[in-house]
Length: 243
Ligand SMILES: [Zn+2]
Ligand SMILES: [Zn+2]
Image: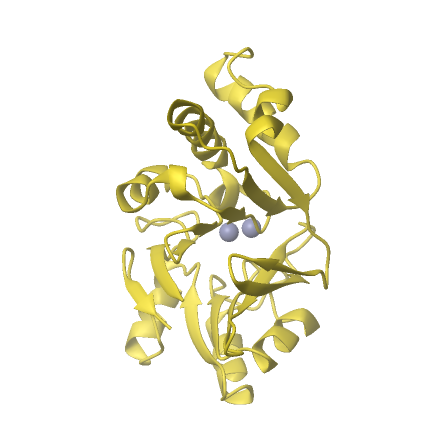
């Protein structure tokens, strides 16, 4: 899998928010501020699918722009197949609402127009399906009171690459790590808390699941600094990995 790391940060810092382009065909989260780096890297017209972890802005904030651009491009260039967007219930309604609030143009995008070009697929914990040649598995994570999903992708050779999204330590995360060769894992927490894994917890999991190469993402500046000082597999915005 080719992984383009669009961003590595959580909301509060100068780096881009955490999101990924997979094989130039799929997006994992469309964070606020990441629309431009994404369109500098890929042609939205060629997208197969978007996976959304949860409804915090640093994960879904630019989805309304990407979907609007996709609709425009596919009408202009005559695409007949739909884009698939995987995420929780209510995602299309949220896109339309957000668009109205931000642009004050209620006619520009409505649910009918959105569903004309895009299939919204509601995900649930433990769900498995095929997408773009991968077997995808959905994990419900533990992110305070927010409903949040992580996704793992298994290729035809059986290699599994996972994305935890926002989570603290939980059974789902551990199951994901125990079955993955590579995992991109939330390390935003500076102290232990019910929303995010912190760096000591991350380091413990690295020891506990040595067969999984873990990359800290969604980092705060202190946790990114910790990762660099301790030779963890830290990443930079714009980095491309072939795993
Ligand atoms: Zn976040
Ligand atoms: Zn969040």
